[in-house]
Image 1 (cartoon, one colour):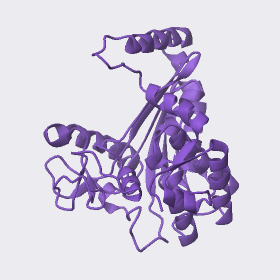
Image 2: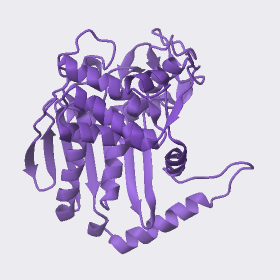
Image 3: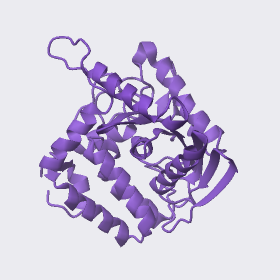
Length: 345
């Protein structure tokens, strides 16, 4: 039996993910949102947050942690602010609705923030920032997660990997897209390396006492962005995600989460919070000025002086190239995921 990934055509992967969700009774709107978000990640090469999570989500739906048929509700308290109640369903459903609502409000007010409460893991935050950019807005999305990253100088997990994602439209091109964890890597990448039995890079993960390790089977935490000398930057940015997603929303703080994986309790909802923001260029310098500026900006990024053998890229360039490659060659699936989705290994 091989631990190497296999490549499967996109449409075939998507069909099997949808079938897996339908088999466990997930509602059509929530499973479509989850599939959309996971396929986004798998297409762009963010495999840690891609379709490999289908098995986990299905287990949580069966176990009762996730509501199979959530009814989203909205509490709007101002012209440019609102909260979406996710009804303990799949977080992708609530997060996409939050960005949709933020764009609707920002169309009138110029800028709108929408929070989410009583939600769950949303996958790649960039999926929701991108959803804003695809509607013509500057999009931002963040969430806090359960503790798996020590503080700078800390020896115990405190923050989650707490992503910050931004996207902006570019006329005639794929959007500018930045989706980054505030940790060195997301914890799901450790799980992926465990499945592939592949060593981690140096300086991205640590054992339970905070000692850096490269063996994914020994990794209990991931280190904050910036490493041993500058990790205070990543730790501080993680706090921004917690401030907006948990403190502002009145939801679960990082150290108080039931762990996403490994917990015996898979029947209690985790009350996760998210936060999204949409900014309308029309309400600032204007659409034409913004589009001209974005085009000139990304051109200057790509044509900046480069070291020998290197090529400067705009945020998202690497991911869009990966999407083109995977559209042609298929999405690589680890053996565990391929077996769960009933795809050939």
